[in-house]
Each structure stands twice: as structure tokens, then as C-alpha cells.
Length: 123
Image (tube, rainbow, N blue to C red; front, side, top):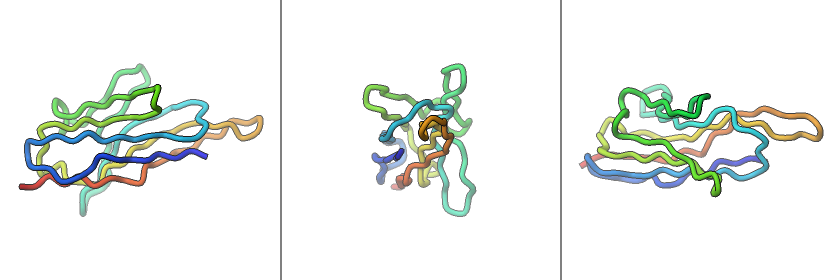
């Protein structure tokens, strides 16, 4: 019913930039959480950036000043702009959304994950 499809990953040199996209499809009634996670080899998944309840954004300290999260509501797409990339940014990046959908007359709440996109920062 709902799918999140990611794109934009790749191999870049330190200091380079990438923009990740997360396109949502399906009938979404509401969005209660929207953000980006990443997981590097041997490490646990961490929250990178997210929209807060008041509409502002929250960034992990490790990416603050370098990453920007945004949406294009007309395209049902969320973006993660990554600048000044460092080798330690290397990870699989996942978009995440906690949304509600209509199941008949009832509202169903579900967490959805993108398939993940690999970002590798290396010279």
C-alpha cells in the first residue's frame, strides 16, 4: 500500500556532495514521523536527520552544518542534501516514515522503511 523508494547514493570523494531522495507512493492519510537513518558496517543504526513535531529539523551532531533535510510535498519526496562528506559518513542510508493509512473505516499506523542506498566516501 505504501512504499518508500530511495535513490541518489554512490561513491564520492571526501569533501564532495550527494543528494538522497525518498519518494513515497500509496495512500497516506497522515505522517507522524519523517527522517533519515544510516548504518555503517559494525555499527548500530543511527538517526541522522528528522523533522520535529513543530516543523523544524533535527540533525545529529556529527552532520550538523553539513547535511540538510527537506521535502517537496508536490512530489511526495524527502531529500537529504549531504555536503562536505567525510569518510565516516560512509553507510547505508534509510528513509523512515511513521504514517497512518485508512483500513476501511479505521486508521492504521505503520512504520515504513526505504530499501536503503549506499553512500561511500573515499579517495
